[in-house]
Image 1 (cartoon, rainbow, N blue to C red):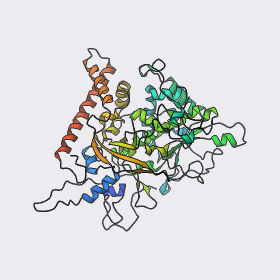
Image 2 (image 1 turned 60 degrees about the vertical axis):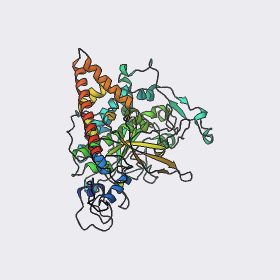
Image 3 (image 1 turned 30 degrees about the horizontal axis):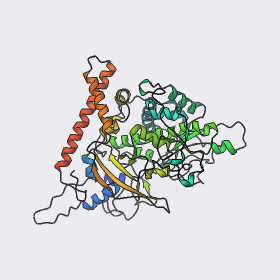
Image 4 (image 1 turned 90 degrees about the horizontal axis):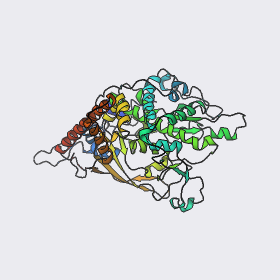
Length: 523
């Protein structure tokens, strides 16, 4: 159900603020969200400095990994302004088109015998519903851009074509030494694959096979419910990709067809049905769902090495020296140099807790770390030498990124010419670092108190230097093709705007007084 009026706890005496309606209340008796950026407070002569906003700022730091909303606003990482509309052409990969979305329960492959009803009698959660298609279409257009651009990644070539190698015993814990089903893959040599000469042929072949031979089907699932069988425990994931392997192996029906399915929780789609989102909030959510779709497609592709070869029940393969078998996050690491996490998750004042819009996203730099264990293939194990990181560093993503990825030139010019990872030229230097500990009895991961820091050498200096060098090389060229000129102009515009933003936000934050309890960092 769409969360709009908040009904838990004692009713507030005043109308809820706009942010409280979207992001939840500070307390059961407060009409505010507690997340609105606070104003700077200055003590009067002879008074002790006790700003009224301090209680809200402490609340914000707990929710936003050490940042206050004012910090994020100064860094232009809050969706508080309108963005340029999308200029992407409305092309959708055949594999993602409306005809490949669930219209009836997938039986007899799975026990679930009903589709999910929408709130307020608006029909069912199916792509063909005229209420849903207008919010789904721009997401599929953006997911198409993500998926069609990946053929130049060495990671993607390795996923498709690299040989699988057994994990060496030195990387396996003593209690798992009897496992003979653990394998890894790594980038092929420069002779076998080169980004400069890569073609989309393998990409197109695998997408066509998923769609036509394995009848790849997408659908929606209810939060907290297993989409294959509601009587089974839910996975806790916002999306799931699975084959009908149990049906293939155990059902006596003859001539069965192996298939693959992806289901997406409909909670974020519910947010897009709201009438009170601005374009920045909307683009932020659209990017998040499109990223999830691309993530899940990588899981589907991996089945070519396991289930589609009749190797059922095998864990996903490990990429290179990564310690976890999680193809989706490995893809995100390859394309974004990190995974992402929401600013906000659920409104815990409501019982049961209710999903709320994300407000924004952090880029998580340390992969894999202990936070990713819950998301890995349950048939896999955690490797060592190297193992997982027991800390993380996160950087807020500026809202200009969500605008960038919705522009055609970003993909047709910038990504084609300069590669992926342009997100990092937009990323801020302000980060937050926290430790991770695992309870040996419960396995639960506990987060330490976050500490703010500045990455003075930027998040990924080598990547950004390569980008600058590539733009400058084009600028100095005496003769440019029209495509090269467009790339040079786009790259220089991105450089200039990013540097201007960085100067503005650095100058603004350094000119403002430090907020209480911010570990002495001037913002």
